[in-house]
Image (cartoon, rainbow, N blue to C red; front, side, top):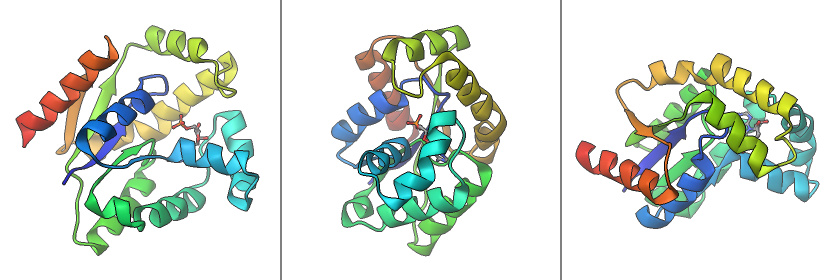
Length: 184
Ligand code: AMP
């Protein structure tokens, strides 16, 4: 049973790797960005709350995000492990996650930190062309990452496995699996 968090700047390939690793490890891929986008697409009340933040590259407020994650982790498939992609993104979110897991007698297996040089990040994001991938929004998302999310690296220092995230999809997932094996 494996419970993982993926951390890395926007454009580091977390979503791609999360999909590959969730398949190989047999645990659900839980992406808060995907959950928000699905809610926006379906015009749900949650989507209405989240839309302006995604459009601006800002973080959705913690109460909204934490509640969504709490509900998702309560679903049966997540009891057998999970891979969280894009959550937590702030230290208060990490505290909530620690509490949710502790309530169920669980803790994280590891935090995979995806490392990519900044020029490569901007290049990758401009190439994928999502609606929040315009240059201004990309810069804002990178700044938000530095300010809000990087402190998590200290919070999780005992659980971090650093992954060099430059290379082919297969190379990167192999590095991640090897890092997990070496830790186990
Ligand atoms: P992502 O797909 O992970 O790049 O997330 C896209 C957008 O969804 C972010 O720029 C935020 O607006 C929002 N979002 C995703 N995850 C979170 C989170 N953990 N906390 C707050 N906002 C989030």
